[in-house]
Structures are given as structure tokens and as C-alpha cells.
Length: 311
Ligand code: RIB
Ligand code: CA
View 1 (tube, rainbow, N blue to C red):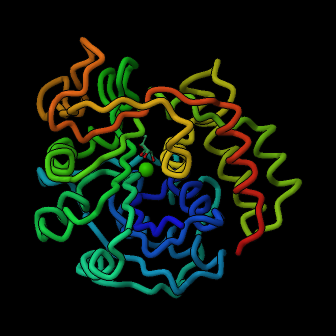
View 2 (tube, protein in one colour):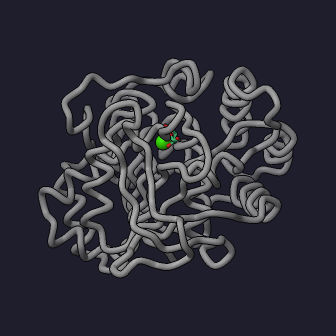
View 3 (cartoon, protein in one colour):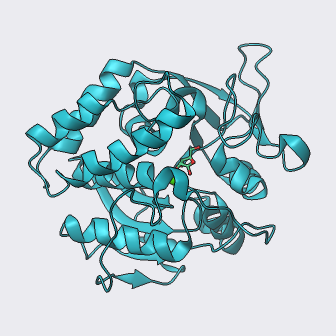
């Protein structure tokens, strides 16, 4: 069983990842840290609260994280991709009950659960803050999964950079520098984690859970946004859900261990890089980069989890 603390900015693919985590029989969600990113922190918190309510899991703590990047810059949101409120066509109702905790709850969870896993599927700012505030405690976390970066492929927010690392490259470097072990799900794999309209319809037709209507609604909205950007792609890339599939299926995914850095300035801001000139693992390398996976296995797993009964 993976005891999971998620850092997220829902956002459609974050929402699908949160649902995947809530439905997966071998994941125990212990909390969700919400931050700016695809939407504002406030909106990310409301969206998370709505998803937890639908699952009947209002008991799961929601921990408010960062409002803007470490640089203090104004952050850009993406309503054209994720919808005005971040859930495509869905507007979460007002006044949803939420088990809101202070940021220090992150440290309490790590202390209480020595086997805790962290997955960060948003801008890395809140996680970097956690390292800065309590380095010793954060270095007790064995596994940190990070959706971010791009190797051998273009970026998505600029020609060179992926959105999460571009959103706060300084924070990305803090996490990469201080974390014990980071497993990176970059665009070179997540771009190919596509959910087709047929797959979304299939989930709807066989689903036994309260997300039966929401999943096709948000996926089809996301598909329409992707169709404008990438008309030849057969559906949207669900980056964040892939990061959790990676977490639960590590043995199936081809990965290499390298030392990764992120450019912080100029046109290359947010660009991730590592030394791929040879196949060697540099001494002290602690960044495992996903490079390849079996698409059919991913899709089959996604459909199975997303249509399963809530346990
Ligand atoms: O680049 C993909 C990432 O940026 C995902 O986390 C997605 O939610 C977007 O914000
Ligand atoms: Ca995200």
C-alpha cells in the first residue's frame, strides 16, 4: 500500500490523478497540498474539496500551499486548457466542507508515516518550501515523484520548457538538490499518456463510482483544448495521472538514473537537462527519469482504476 501525500494544482489532469489515487486499491491518500498553477491556490483548494466530497472522503486533509513562485512573480493560469475553474465545464458548488490543515501538517504526516510517498504534480514551489522549512524531516521521505521536465522532446509551455518546472525553476532545483530520491515523469513519457474519447466513453459505460459523469466531461473538454494545439493527436495527454501510474508500476517503466538540473533564466527558463552522452549513472545520482513505457498497459490500467468501485 502506498501512503501518499499529493501536491497538486487541479487542473484537469491533476483532477484525473487525484481520482486515480482515490480509486486505486493500493493507494492510501493521506493529504493533498494545493497550490497555484493551472488555477489559483484558492480554486485548486475548492476543486480538491469537491473531488474529495464526490468520493465521500471529506476526511482527507487539504493543506494550502504556495500562492506564487519563489521569485515572487505573478503566476499565469491556463483557463483555455483547464476551463475557467480548472475542471473543464464543471463548476464546483460553493461552500463545500473541507478538512483544511496548516502547512505544518506536511511535517506531521512525514513524522507519523515513515513510509510516506510524496507525488508532486504541480509547480514545485510548495514542496521546495517544505524542504526549506524542515530539511531534516523532508529528507526522511524515501520516494518523491515529480511530474515535470522534458528530455529529448520540446517543452509544452515554451519551446524548451515543461509547465511545472517553468512555473518555478528555482523551486524545481531545490527539490532536485535536497530530496533523497526523485522519480521524474517528464513530457517525453507523459505526452504519450493519451486518453482517447473512446477510452473516456468506455470508462463512463462501465464505471461503478461517483466520478462516472465527471471523468468523460473533463476529459472531453481537455480533448477539445488539445485538438486545437495538436490536431493530429488522438486525445489529451494526462501528464499527472501518468506520474501516479509510474508510481504504481515502476518495474514496467524504462528509466535511467542521472543528475538533473533546471535552467532558471533566459529563453531556456524551465528547461531540464542531464548528461545523456553516455549510459553511465553519475556518482551520487538520485534522479530516476522515466524514458519509455507500454502505452497499452497504461491505458488498460487507467480504464480499470478509473471505472472501479470506490473502496
Ligand atoms: O506540463 C504538464 C503539467 O503542467 C501538468 O502538471 C499539468 O497539470 C500542467 O499544469
Ligand atoms: Ca498539474
